[in-house]
Image (cartoon, rainbow, N blue to C red; front, top):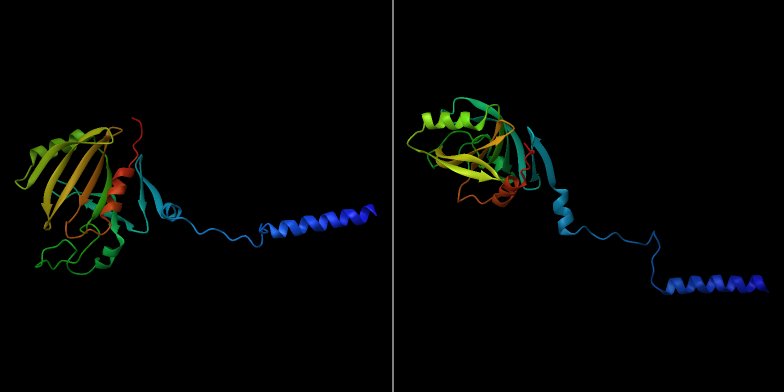
Length: 204
């Protein structure tokens, strides 16, 4: 008699559990990822020298380039550059997104709109002195501060668009940021700014 009552109690508990709407592990459906989770999944990280950065890989492409250095633009330096993905198809064909109508040069990652980072060998003062000694009429230099680091910025026109070169001191060397933008091209502008804001410097 005792065993029969126990069996009834177990059966009753099973029925109550089923009626409560609780699902088993097999019946449980996973919730779709929320937009914030999807956005985080697209964030890629990297470093150049001791400086860390992140970027949205769903919007931007990371390219390795040889960056012409001012003031003569004859010397080049290795750099990483972030390009809006929907501009990548223009690479290798005539007329970049920023070029003037009569331009007929093939577009390259170095020329296209984007945000580049290079880690230079010498202190920031070296590059400042070189610019002052060779400042052209179309160049303007002004002091700037990024993430509590005091440096300077060079503005100059090249290939029909304005470039901003920002030189910042890092461990007795120099981080160079190069921004090429164009008002008529808004593609990825917010994501390019996010790369700039993501920069993390070492404690000197």
